[in-house]
Image (cartoon, rainbow, N blue to C red; front, side):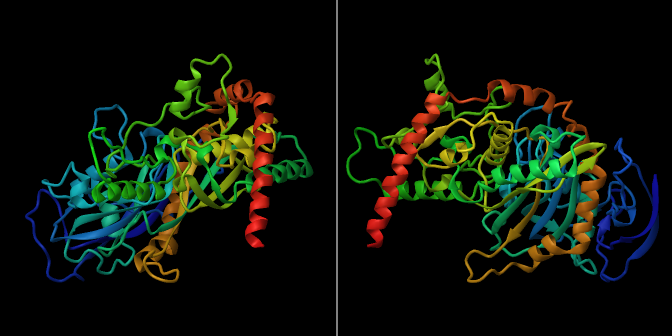
Length: 513
């Protein structure tokens, strides 16, 4: 048990339901109280420690609510452990599991940040997020913008926006944390200005063949080999085999048989807009037209493979499923477009680490944006190759736009959104808004995120890093038993790919001449 004494600011714009609503004229008129904070760790590991002096302190008494003065666009940095939720995005239906945004909406409402007339409709307050994560995925850096009802002196003597965050946190469960709330400009687009998403994936070392009794040389050999596999994903590639392709396929305008003449401008513009929406999608993201509501996640077969539903329907009639094929001719029902291309800046694993006596490695994946299941399929494929379940050239083949290859899907329980980068897209140069610089780089905010990671997130992740327990206890045997593409299918793809590559090189030389 750790005990620390911290000074907590009681701000003048805070009122309790039992007091008369009032607004103090002097924004500097506040009291400092000394509060004893008792921190308990639920972790079974003695090496997961918390520096209580970095912990964010909530309000002194429960039920505090600020007095709204005006509506202002704000942006907040949020962290959460996604194990007990259906994902980030709110879903207006009855279900035993809530969503992260559902909890945030209720907490902000109770703290005074949402009017009664706007509660229950995120569109009314312009709610938007930098990334969307699915069930089981965690985050330390989700940025959410909204039009919030704020008090008169919201950020007076509080440039990091800790006060508003603290009172919202008083209504949140322990596994969701708002680190900071800062004012923003009307033109700020939190999703489109996020130009780099940084994810990490914690993988038990045993899954990639690193045993506890290995020497340092043996460990280095295995990690170097695994890094060679992961590095192949870096660059700008079509990742259509690493997602549900149909969700990122721009639909062509349909014209009824009775319709005559050209397609209307409205129809063209609506489809162009749909395409742009797909461009900005992110990991575990389903790009709907309405950005505030989510649909159910794709069905995952056996927890390992997740094929395009169109392909599944076609293969039901086949005795031997087609797991790898090459499109010799364009297929209008299975097109690969610009929205399937994604740029990966970095994909590598770090050194061997240990938590609760379990060896693991952290895989870092940095990219502009990610599609539904993309990261988990990248990890699943890399693991399958390392375990000699798939050939090494599967990566080069699967990253060709004419190939259609089924690849495995890794568990979601250890995937974490770590950080983001932001730039103003409509301005020349890499200009970042000042509030986003603070949210991304402020040492005080980073300390709060790190405290949440070590005191709340890691203790829960330690329970799913044991390779002898769920999800690995089930996932690895299913992976070993079901991952394998018939050599005849692979050879057909190899021959077709080689022929295409040679033709492409010849065409490129002619253009140069």
